[in-house]
Length: 265
Image (cartoon, rainbow, N blue to C red; front, top):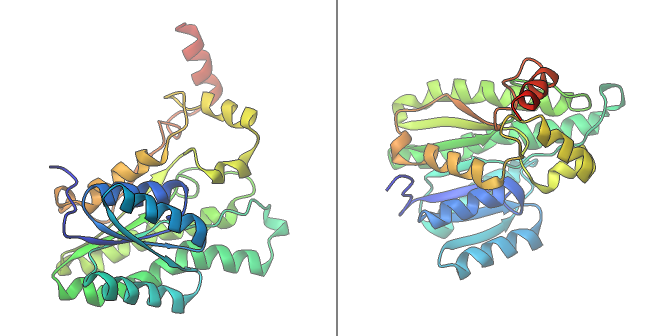
């Protein structure tokens, strides 16, 4: 079966809601034991309880991945709780929409620590455990914003995700001979609570019209891609990011594309 994770242990950061929740649920359904690492204890516990109720194995560790010591604690907790560690998914991110001229040092530090530096910290903490058992997976939720497109008010976020893609490629080379693959997913517009920062329901509906598939994605669309990259079927893939955006980064001009679609009605 494609995506069989039986016997595997995974850490999923930011799994209290949205994409992270979707990944945690998907991995648990595929047989993995999942440690939910999130700042939102109430949401994270609800996700863990729901997974267990459905017959999966999951637990919560309230964690601020923007703190180096808490990242190390998360890895140690996963190994102590489940006896091993196979997959680390760094999905947690912050998304304060602010123009460059209004960014404070605190805004920059928080964004880069949570979104990017935590990726380095998780690799450093988990690497000895993955090497000990002969391999594993590091997976990252990147974004089309930064690596492929730009949006006003998101320079700090875009920089963190562009940096993440550089980390993915370099780490893939450094750990290839350890049978450790490093990959990521670049989501486009995915229907999560974070979308509220981008506008009203009406404005989000207008965004959806510009997507070639005509709709926003759902967390399961990212989770299924992550599941593939975590599986044995993706064992020969490393240093890559997969764009999952409904085709939103393809058009040279959304206006021309809209006119084309309207001509076909």
